Length: 346
Ligand code: HSE
Image 1 (tube, rainbow, N blue to C red):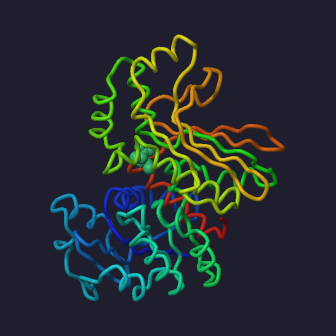
Image 2 (tube, rainbow, N blue to C red):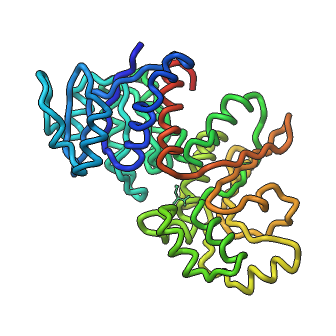
Image 3 (cartoon, protein in one colour):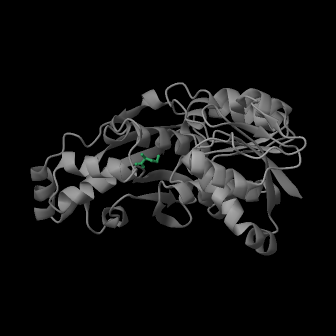
């Protein structure tokens, strides 16, 4: 079956998925039996298009590249312009909503309302926004279940690196007692650059230029971004209802070159670690800089890369290292959610 998609928002991540769908359509179909067509795009700045038979994704990407807007997409019989996000979610014939709006992680909006509207209209949602999962996981997963639809959010932690699906699928049967990891690429990049001799300020500026940092880099350097990811891991992998307020949080902004040098002298390395540990029916969690021995697999992770170690009762520690951000990498996280919706898997 061809899955019909409606994009809500069409920024870097949405365009990343659209480019994959354009460039790999044939291979995805032949090798993985996966086919999708984009029927709608609604973006508050770039404009909105809806055609029940599908839009031409190459033309959409060309128009966006040339003008930054959807207005120059050619008129075809049956094309509708100007629908807002909720109208697109409720009234389009999409099977799945690709929710890629800018989300305020403090409120989770507008993405939480987009999920509610999609689920109650019988539509699946895939997203990489952390807000709705960190803040409304219980409500939204129940609502999706009630309406017989699916909610994919692999990209909320470590972009397309399967930090959520791997423990849920391939490590099923294990009791995962502790999860710890490097969940923020910006801070890991800064620490790596500082070890190579750069100042904190220069390293942060470079991380911003390279596009790793959040719009407000305070979220990266003070550990808030990592804290949301710890909450998502606790809720989805350990099934414990942790809130952000329950996660103690310390960032890296106070670390100096002297701290980095003295760690080196001890044969150790500073890393910003997020960890969550099961305790009874709950969990304790924190985000803070930790001094790791070089023998720890997380100590060897350099640059804007993420890593996660699961402490499994049957298998022992398993570490997964990979991308934590990026246009194509996060675009892929949405694709793998779509493929698994198609397969009827989680
Ligand atoms: N700013 C984040 C990071 C991007 O540096 O890892 C992904 O959440």
